[in-house]
Image (cartoon, rainbow, N blue to C red; front, side, top):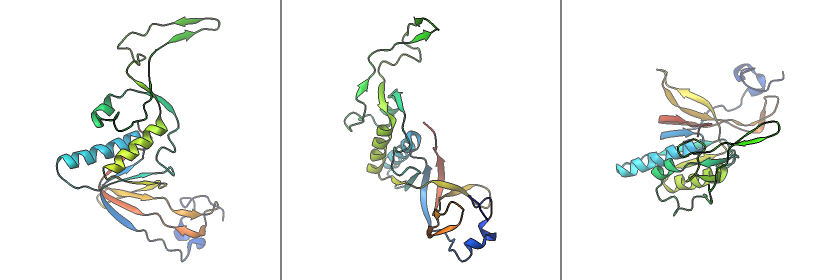
Length: 209
């Protein structure tokens, strides 16, 4: 039988999965964060900062589906640094990759034959003086370095494929993706079960800025 996912033909009834070890290894953390983008990494950094300020030790784990932090963050951006000033006030001394400050704004309405300039006044959303033109991939990679320096455990190359629940319906944590599966849904000789990460708090920052 041809299938591409175990939700189509459950593994329990699929003879190709008979005698395959399906037990997952599990690990415990205080906080598990799904997604290694700006939101997830900023949350991880702030959690470790708060723990340090309150002289507490917490374990923060972050999983990211890309093979490296920043690998799936491809776009450019015009970044307003106010939030970063609050999170890491010394970001300039830390070598944040902000090398191109905005020096000029131009906004226009294009018609079929004409370009009509529109003035940009301070306070308007298009007024970007004080902001920076950045490559988000480089910025996210730098955020990852800051998080690791604070003790955040970062696991690139692991996608959260399942949300785990307690019997009362509350979130228990996540399970990472299985690896070593053929396109037809059968296990390869190198099949490895994903692992479970249990936490007191699970944060989902996938696709968030």
